[in-house]
Length: 225
Image (tube, rainbow, N blue to C red; front, side):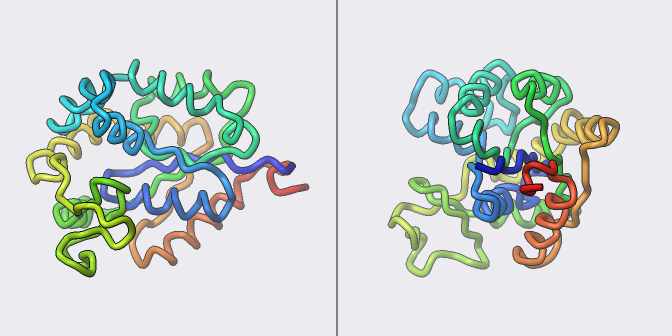
């Protein structure tokens, strides 16, 4: 089996990381690993981890490293990620987490780290209008709602505004990004693994740019060479 790609997509929340990670996972037939999805599932099930994480998420805070590292480490150790690779969405968010991720992956290496670049004013607009299905996680917006009365087109679940998509929580997350996550972009740039990609435009256009960036940086064995 030809190894798949190992990709990280960075960027402000609301830049479209989740949507584009899903698209890349389909293109390269690799798992999409979203720490946000895993945490929200734990919150919905009211597990001890979910109850702890909910306090931070509702306040727009980042979940502590020890919680995320254990969860990500368990997921990366599964057969599908070991055999095929992954598109990692929502982790790492700090240099410390990135260093821990390198240790988790060793002796394997990342193919590319993508910085999905979207202006802050556009991110604010996207997040304020975002709506999400509480059951399956499908995203909608006030400009592209479900067909019927905020009922999910996919599963029939209720479509709501997430508690962490209020203006106050969004502003707090963006401030945390600038303080803790933006230095991560510089760190990956210094280690020659970062590629900046314009995240503006139609989803198809952005995906095309991402695929070109990944293909240019994939390991020779991952390209079947």
